[in-house]
Image (tube, rainbow, N blue to C red; front, side, top):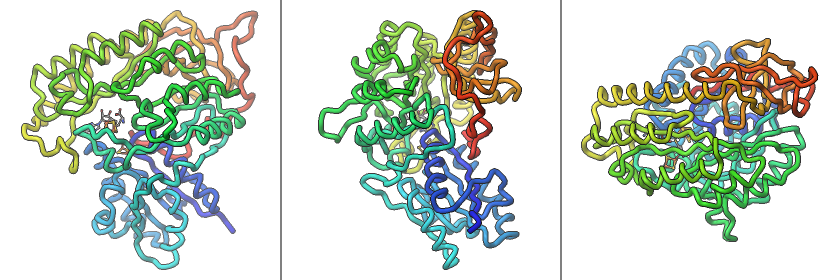
Length: 466
Ligand code: SAH
Ligand code: SF4
Ligand code: F3S
């Protein structure tokens, strides 16, 4: 039978990006093929985000636009999954009658059956049941010749930061058994994956509930032993769970890349307390010092919010002060967005929109300069770069990442994809670096690549909105 075509659009974070890969894996096994052309699709799926108002609006406007398409092609099925689907459930079907399917964050495995049912009966379906452990935690998307791959190590979140909706839409935190994770990483290594990114909302609390005193650094040590894997990264970690054992892992584990994403959210103790973050600015600064002492040159990136309810000018000044002190390599900054169902949504003294906008601009102007300065500091240095694919800026060039997670574009052969080569950095820009292969005796230095261009390097199989 001819495969059915599925067009999948992803909103939100890396968790969702990885879930989209899982959805495609589940559908591929049931004779679906992904397409990037929405007009030839039999099924359109949106994997959605509700962490802030903006991604939520993007989903709603995309859904609105799909109405016309559905009118022209009535047999086409439109489905919405992910965090907004989990949050809104049945309400989405009522608000958008041209929608056929809503599936929650724990229900990816049901998608093929739900699609078949809709095709058979013509009725709308909604499944947002939470499992103790979502079956999709064990779905391994062995996607076509990738160089780097996500690996789920836990689901959900128990932290309930007061601004955040994620615990409500992803459910309680559950760690995946260590053996399953290691088996997956080995399977990826056999498929020539070189870099794994261990994924979870709070990876450094990994092991909770597994019952044998298993910790996140234990997991890292085991992954570090797996042959074929050259680089390990993880995201996201919480400052409260950044143990000394994890800090020293950056010195002791050869494959662990010198980069940590460590969101701080605010530089004011008063606000941190209201956010329920369970650390102080002093503790945060101390942990960054320890990281830099153990692993000089480690790249530190973070997330930060401005305009949390009750944030005064002084609180904001404390945030700016922390940014100046730490000198982050990169920062993801957001205006606080009121999320129904979160504790902070009901706090009095919500900050005016204009004030939030102004604060975000000030913060971003400061960080832009720091990021550029840090990128410029790499000029003239030699960096090991894992080659991932064609450069997006110039398809005749190739791109890869330094161990500090900076993107480098440089002229080179597509056959180097999957290899780790020495690159001399020539120029540091705002968001990337430019370099040239370091040649000794006319030969690139480092591991050979795969010798061919991988499928995933040619282009993403799903489109992603951040
Ligand atoms: N679990 C991860 C990230 C979760 S969401 C962590 O704790 O680091 C990613 C980022 O979105 C958060 O770090 C936070 O900075 C931001 N975010 C979460 N809720 C938000 C809200 N209500 N308004 C604005 N930004 C928010
Ligand atoms: Fe949200 Fe906090 Fe959990 Fe991150 S740790 S997902 S910010 S509740
Ligand atoms: Fe990620 Fe958005 Fe959900 S940030 S966990 S997709 S709410």
